[in-house]
Length: 336
Image 1 (tube, one colour):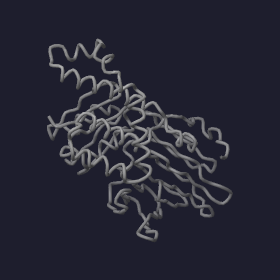
Image 2: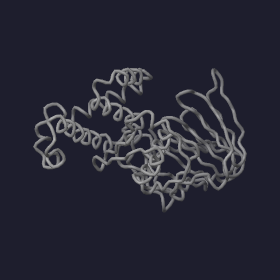
Image 3: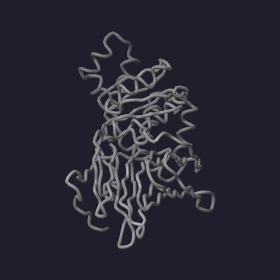
Image 4: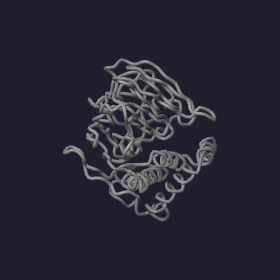
């Protein structure tokens, strides 16, 4: 593996804090399954999720391992003896105490998942941001890359090629003009090619999206057995659904591109599940949506990502949703 370069700008420092989105999703499913072990529909969904790919199966195995390592087997009595559990269950029947014990142990499991960095991502990344951080990297060719919270990139260039791989999160690119050496940004199977322009690229476990603020770019993506191609103009918004393997496009106002640079999240008709995905990198823990119907409700608005818990409350309020902070590392979003 090539040596990692030193910081190329005074305001850029390689960091080492990130999470695997599939691991987060596996942990969320595991928590729901532990909380409702008799839910047959959920159990079926879990089996289908694990069988989706080798990556999903490995993420599930890792989540189960963390669950066991945090002492869920044989630790129930220790949790029930804790002062915090007694305070929250005083006067309640044994079943309530048992449920709170599961939640407390789940919180411990979540903490282990959150603080354990992805080893593969750590090895691949040249620059990373931790939860709540945003950094700007100046590359050797003069291009500037602003990294959103929870973002990781790897340099992918050479003598005749300029490029970056987006490994996780979201970044805003201001590419120095050089027609002889196009600049490539790769996010999984999606590649953006430019000679000089400004654009935003984001990636979650659900979608890869590109928004163009200035200039023109060519985006290529999987399309059946061939590569699809989209030439974008300022204001174009390209999205690639990673699960359905389907591309779509729309037009947005230039001023609404990369609102995260101003600490904002803008949504128009997005599902609560999608909004939660976008807020997860700003929260140093796990967010669990326990109600599928609520997750599919749609919301339009502007939310402050600097306070993700309050943002969640604002998101679900129109649908009578509830946000409960069980611990500093675990939030449940549910119908009231």
